[in-house]
Length: 293
Image: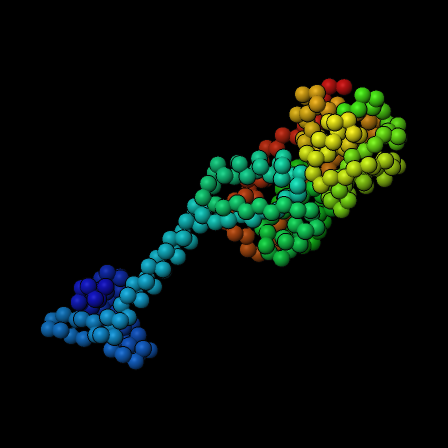
């Protein structure tokens, strides 16, 4: 500003300081650099050759500072930022898109980065800080000390098939002779279902395993066996008649979808906004009783 006005008074007025304060800061800068930056030219002040050399760099620094402040203000207003979220293969096809679509409607300038994988890998990424949030199937995480439960939704599993000879209502034990198509070993879905079958003292004859519900449904629709799948993943198929429900006499399997974060004293504003949206998200959870027998 001094280079343009040639006056300490006008320069001070432009930055909201006293002329003495501006003079003192210039002298400190000259002492640090070991060069005079301005000199008198009649009644005006003008930059010395050293000041002229320094001027474009100072302008760049000011521009960078203004850009940084502007970016921070945009971030505060959620006009920019990023949310990094991980999700299992099945949840990425059914639940996550609904959450992302609703978030995008309110915060269109915030970037959404998604990573898919099995729960152990996602939780490792969450722990290392490469993910902000993870959407997984689990009830065990509620007591996990390293993570914070941000939101959860209960859901039911359903036995489904397209085998003509498969019963429409029975006990699990009556299905021991039928082939089952289930989730891949090591996945959270498989762990939940396997634990349930053990509790029910049922040991299915598993002939195929896949890492997502869509692949399993494709096998079931072609009549290759029976499966236990989240009800929300087969609800439309049951209504259209592409699959039929096997009503079991035992209590149904109920689990949770959970949104977890790494415990931290600092949560970025875009991540906090996503969490708040998830906590009010109206996930429509179909119930077995809503299906026709």
